[in-house]
Amino acid sequence: MPVTGQVVVRRALGRRLARMRMGSGKSRKDVVDAKLGISEATLSRIETGKGPVTGANVRALCWLYGVDQSTTDALAELAVGTSQEEWWDSSSLIPEWFKLYMGLEVSARRICSYEGEIIPGELQTEEYAQAVYAAAAPGDDEGAERHVKLRIQRQRTMFTRKPPPQLHYVLGEGALTRVVGGEDVMQGQLAHVRKTAKLAHVEVRVLPWSVGAHAAMAGAFRILDFDDPEDPDVVYIESHLGAVYLEEPHELTSYRAIFDLIQAQSIPIAEFLR
Image (cartoon, rainbow, N blue to C red; front, side, top):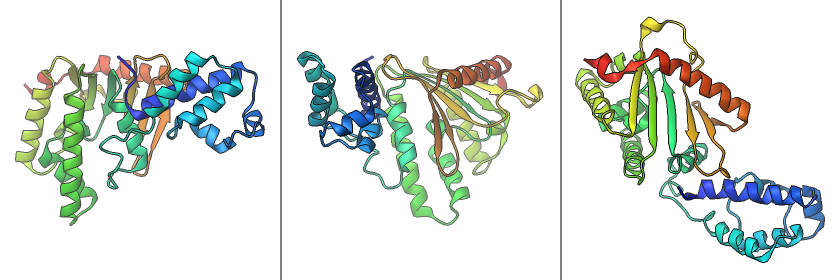
């Protein structure tokens, strides 16, 4: 799958430029001392994929690192993709830390998710999503409507991708038995999850209470896998006020082991809901 999405392009370009700098034997201070008009803070943001990159900056860095012309041209062209806005970028309702996740989500080839207390956002019905928002912000009906529209738009983006991402969910029994929005809303939500689980690229499993203690009791997480070797896989952990993104190999290994353990202890949702 080609590198797509501004977040993925930024990360891929940043890593390539960082490797070229180190390969040329230069430090970040050396870049600043070269008087290219690039501060150390700007270089850090470029190399970590935290922001858009101009073609001029790419060409200046490539010149300093002694990169050949064809590679320079290719990287300068790649820089164009770091500034292309996605539909969520202009929304003031979506926090910046979640915009980063959405940029990763649209390009991941596989997402493995564990949720113990709530149906994941991309599997929620409108009624369930409204009830969830109402519990977090009572009385804000207008805000609830706007947030639900954004959630549905995110679902549409995910489930109309070609090719679709492989989605693997392990849900705690509490996510399916806690009545959110009333019995009718919950029945509609369960029917929607059951229907979605029948898609060829979606797997939904349930971790029953009877399992007892399990490896994921510390909380929900997601593992996003990418095809491009320039774009490392990510563990995403969300809180009420932000999110943590883990990329180190040992971190990914640990979370993959946790997911494998709970997946082995879980049962298909069709078996749970029969």
